[in-house]
Amino acid sequence: MSLYQEVYRLARQIPEGRVSTYGQLAAFCGSPRASRIVGAAMLHAPEGVPCHRVIYKDGTLCCEQAFGGKEIQRQMLEAEGISFLPDGRVDLKTHLWEGPKE
Image 1: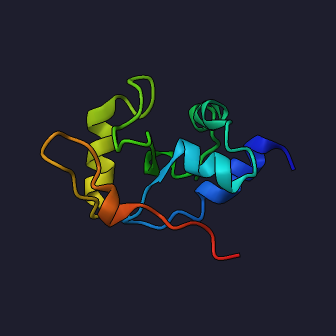
Image 2: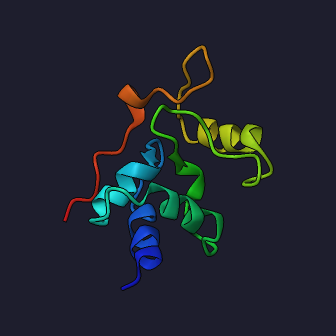
């Protein structure tokens, strides 16, 4: 299985109301230094991969190229019950996914 395929498999497991980080997904794939590759995978993800649930390690949202901008991603996450800190970052203490139950 390619790294992209493994990233997509894991991203599909992130439940509503939870987020993961690019680095976290890279580590779960066994490539802890591949967070940029995870980001590239998310940018090119096939339909059905909940890419909006993958964010930066400090809780900030993705780049402007995806989802039509950060505001769209925020709306998608808020619709799933994700809460944000006053500075606009996701509250990772509340919503960070613990990883796959494998």
